[in-house]
Length: 552
Image: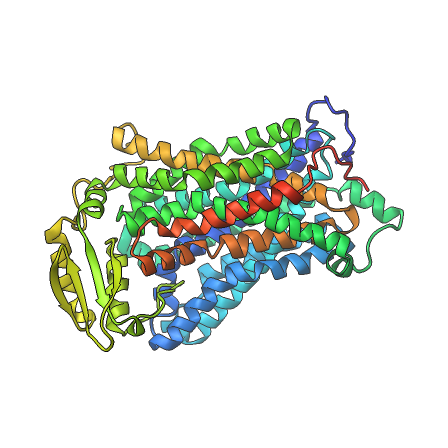
């Protein structure tokens, strides 16, 4: 394949080689995200296979490690592979990352359960998750840098926007494979052994990706720099110990990627969590609703990538963060109205209070859902939150017991055993029961024309639109911020801190806020606050980059 120059004529159409670069880079990244999302989508089933045989304390440690490994290790992957990419080259680095990611995922599908090989099973699983997170930390920076360094001036936003579709397409693909396998096998067989099929299928995707990527040449910008002997011998020092570049890394994180990360995770992951865990929409319907919104919205990554070539990266990214921060509350309330109208009515008309000595109430942060609460104040509040009941906490007398007050009627509460009494009382007051006929339910994948279903998909589509605004131009902006010799390292770290930490911890942190406040919408303050910070920092400090020469 001939080498593509990065200085093609501004108005020229996309060449065959340029299309191949984009397809090869994007396709491999789709498969990497597919691999990564499988664990998140099947975490409950995997937990039952690998963790449930152990005492609660041990199980909690394993579950927390498996959860954290996928997100928290990503910045370390960015550092490791970013350094390699800036010294050795872009092509070989993201060839290695896809091999690590694909093989790790395939081996999860083969891994015997804890019932077969004991404690070795969760240890190996966590090790594979660590490898997945490390590989993903190196993949994105390599793919985005590689495509951008092949792109003509004036079209970098357009070319790199195809990379931006990959995370959504990977999620979409994983949802489709899981739904298809579940439908064919049934829930019992899927939970027993069928969950392995999506993991095993990844080896086919891996083979296709490797074959395609082997045909790629090195980035022309990087190759020219290397031939001229201008590369960095210490990318980590040059990127982070040098204040002029370190300052740009901080600005990229706080003034761009942090807000992008929380808007992205709210529009795709928290929306799914909100439908299932708070509005009690069944998993099949919730996944279909999200899948349709992704299908309708994915093309807008490219639309906003193209627009960023015309008006700039900064106004689109910051505009998306600002609009999202201003509209999250009304959009999620509208989703509640359409998806579970009986719950909305109950929230407005039923007053629930937990009266307790404040000293007996702790925090309810439970990121992997395995923490066991024992204090009556905590068990009552956790149970009400899990039941999507809006409540307030009222300070009781020192040393007093706990009671739940529902529309003025007291329900004595001594321990978790009293939860059934509380549930019966709130349902009698107006809260819907599980499986309420008014909760949205889709009969099949194309059951989208009923007004209730169509309205929810429309609202979810708006959330995806925000995602495309903030995410579509971000790759071009990050590439353009940093010089070639330390570009891979410099852009990868803020990207994966913003997405892996601020974004990845969003669902668990947001629900902890919901549980602690008793307000099903309070978790939205997490993305709203961080998106707003990004708007302010980005407005004052983030430079516009669309016209920069990235060959230096």
